[in-house]
Image (cartoon, rainbow, N blue to C red; front, top):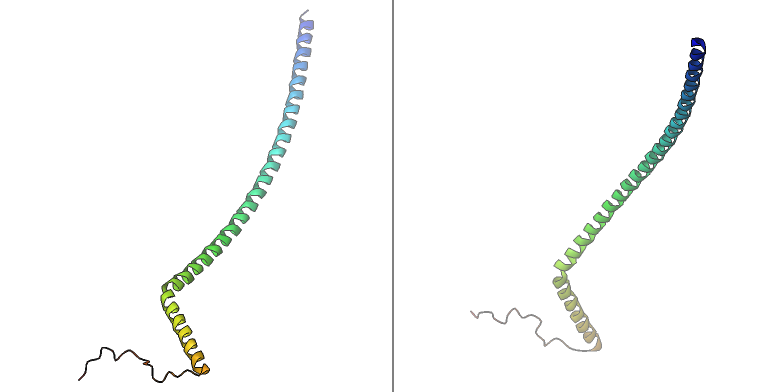
Amino acid sequence: KEMTVAEAEEKDAQADYETLMKDSAEKRAADSKSLSEKEAAKADTAAALEKHTEDKTSASKELAATNAFIASLHAECDWVLQYHGVRKEARASEVDSLGKAKAVLSGADFALLQTSSRGFLRRRA
């Protein structure tokens, strides 16, 4: 009778062992598949990171170029604002000179007109 009990226990133990081995094999297969999927996802993420890094570098260079262009425009605008009055006066003088030249060409005589106002408040000696 002990022999039958031992054989029954041996069969149960063998069945348990085979079930354990089957479950372990399935777990290893699932873990291996999961590991492969995670490695693929990691590779995809690394590729995306590389692309985004390149895009960021490109965008940073473009931003720097745009900022440099804006700075140059700002300098030009500052110059225009600084010399606006001088340029306006020069333009007005040029328009006046052109008007006088046109009048001279039309036959006007400016010989009797005062061309300089420096002597207006001059002291007499």
